[in-house]
Image 1: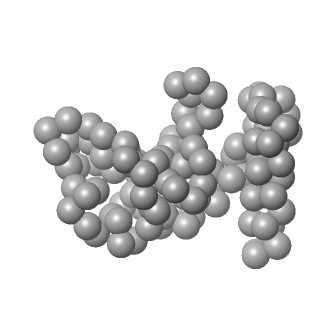
Image 2: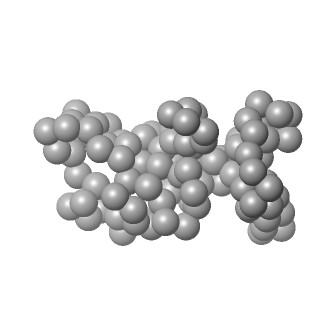
Length: 105
């Protein structure tokens, strides 16, 4: 499922636990994911490559915007060090996200 991961989504029925775990993919930031477990635990992840992901934190301790900022910073740092590879268009997206997030702070 794709949606804007934010406070409205977290409080809606869409992001409530079901019998099976599921993921919601952010429609604004590629790779930013919310995973909802049957136990009720909701966690943010940064996805990249094939089936690779980094845990950013739990939804009860991080606001969606804070998790999104962590996603941008971690992925751009990994991209700069060569830990992950991406196409030219993905690299441009990463550099744009990084520059826009740094100018806001």
